[in-house]
Figure: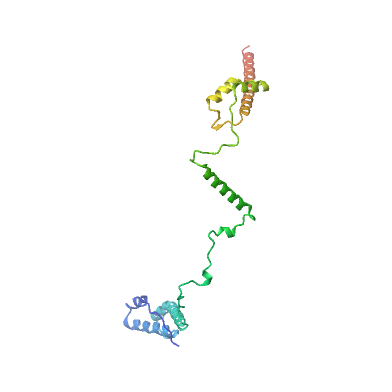
Length: 223
């Protein structure tokens, strides 16, 4: 049974510069194989090599043409719907938000948290909160600077050696800042000064003791 195949321009380019006898033999071999699907016998080495190179392309084109022919016998491409409406299978409208059907807040606590945070964020926007709004919510805890009398009373209560006026003047001039952070507990700051003073006095005492021992050794050497 004969078949159809495609003779590509690349075949012609490969054969055109061959000697006439060899070119004719190669042409006959390619056409014979394309129509019958069988390799001719008794080919010269050059013609046989060319056939082996073109055979896969010929087979592929023959299969494609045969498939097209079969589809044509079956009526070809199915006609379009004359009404212009899509089949019922494709008329189902997708959900506006697919996440609504994929995520259940009741079963997934993390989703509930996300929805709650989103709701809180929208409320904050309604009140004018957020970056650059200039209307930030007031924090739950506000620091109230102590008076000098409060500091004097607290230092007396702890019987420490912190100078209340020095401590008060230092932080008042500094805008009640601890480093770069606003102060939150002034009593904790007083206790920190107290501990630092105790540590400084201890180190000073150790240095004095070492210096005294060195002086004694020097005097022993001189005497």
